[in-house]
Image (cartoon, rainbow, N blue to C red; front, side, top):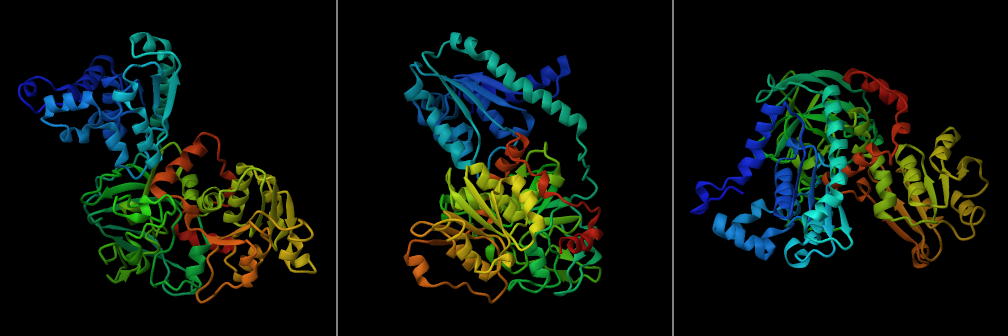
Length: 559
């Protein structure tokens, strides 16, 4: 900290020295660019705190036996009391408090390395690593804590494991310098910030009509908003569903699109979660992360309602639109995203900041379908190792369900679709059985729960939006414990039905939105998993089109 309490305020400026003076000295004397930070004990906490405060300035952070939660330990009470006047003033400098206040992980840090000795005399009363881990788990931040058996708080402990920390930082520094040299999205937005932007967009003027490429004006972001440059889009059937007039909330004229990879161009008043130049994925399911939001605070759901009402009305949270056409007439927003435009405006709580190491034409896939399918398996149903699964509909969502089920260890995965041409990619992703309902002489649910299996599958997933298929999916679920998850969105006015006996005999019918992922917390983790080589997604890209004007061609190809 920089002391504010007499007599320390005259000379104790440790925060300024570590954060500003020392890095500038190293840059001037040794021409150093990218930098990492590490420390021991109270210096370990300092490293964590400084890195958390300004993550874009540091490539990586690690610590040896850090005092993780100083406002909740005797050392912190003494230090903050002396330097700042009281402990409460130290909360803004407390690394655990900083993490605990986040809704999303710090995407700049794919991992945080901490080594701690099990025989450290200060472990329980002063260091409290469990507090930091709890805060990290809450916001989705990865922290690697190595509990080193038999080691204490001494410098011998540091010497024993310093090589691990050097390697940890060296790997990330090398990668950062390479990425900086290859950065192809280093846009200069100084000419547009603070001004309306005139750009191209695909405008849906009415249901069942092709979208029109038009010049529109995108206004500057207001408080709590973010204006972004849209670099890449992926198509989702929800866009088509609205364009066809099936969406009860569909408003026209509007700008569709909700699966995109974007770069922040400017931010409105009060926005601190992202800054110009950051890479983000717009998320139609926002995450405000506020402590009084029972939905964000609950581990049971991701359905934050903070901006739901205005999002459904096709406007920003203040009730107005940021889009206008050449006549000055308003154009509605769509799902809080509207990414079929060269620029769009989002609520900051809808922006998942992701690593710049992933190309945005791949990052966009995590904006809806892929994440939804994976999350339906991992979060909503929590498919266990050895389970049997049936997947109805082999579009992007269905294929993501198959991929997620395979990764979860499902032993049998039944792929169901009326288009057998999709079976090959389903097989590559882990499907074991393939069913075309058009080739059967009985209902598909009877074939699965009777011919392919004795009693049905442990888990079934509807990825079609067809209410009859939803019923089939439920009725092929295992008697006594089978679960069926509705993922596909049905057209306006359609209702689901089944005999109550299907539920009385133990089947569970449930649904999912965005796979249960808390968007700002979990999307960056999905991206990092892909970058780590654990989550391949290239197979979801089948065609590429250049420019906003080719969107109708993409839709025609989708059909």
